[in-house]
Length: 259
Image 1 (cartoon, rainbow, N blue to C red):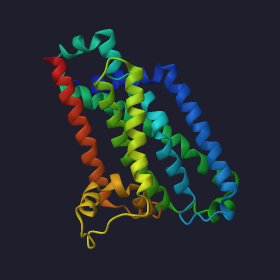
Image 2: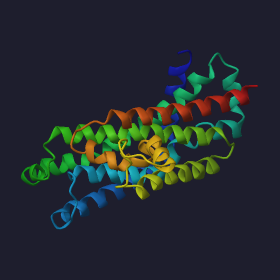
Image 3: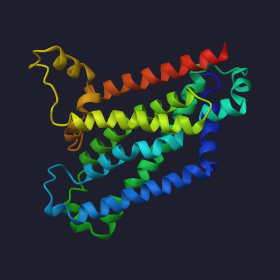
């Protein structure tokens, strides 16, 4: 795709030299690490029925609204404020390449930070192998399932951030809009946890609507499958739809600015 790799390299460079990105990443990983430590220390006295590794995935999901705005808010908002977006759009780069390049950079940086968080159980396994084995850290299906769940939702979350940035010239407004949309998204999943509608037991319009919402309604319920290595294809497809929906909205917004 014309211009995609140029945009991707440029955005990755901007993220790597941005002090706000490092500050946000440091505090985010520090809080995740502290929370993970206290959870592991008290795990034996809790009623947690999922593998302990899923607690790290859950912490990253709920912490995403505090991290992703720092990765996406500058992507379009800062370009519009400085007036460089018009110059960029006059180059031989189509709108899809522009949006995909900026989204890919944010998503790759999110994966990098999430991978840093997954280093905590690895370090625990190195220093306390017996305890780590008893906690299930040696079971690769738990790692694959948890990482798949996190990276799939991370893709749609960063797409929401890119869309928010494309709607305004103020990066703080873009950041707050991203935070609000992601918090609302996660709140819906949290409030509907344990109440997922079965496709075989739908007898009202509300139940039908909730069933159509897919992972927006039962995303956290599906974590129980991913946590033990059972990959739910329906959840992945639903998140791909959410991803494409917000990337298309971002592209439409960029096309409006091009006119």
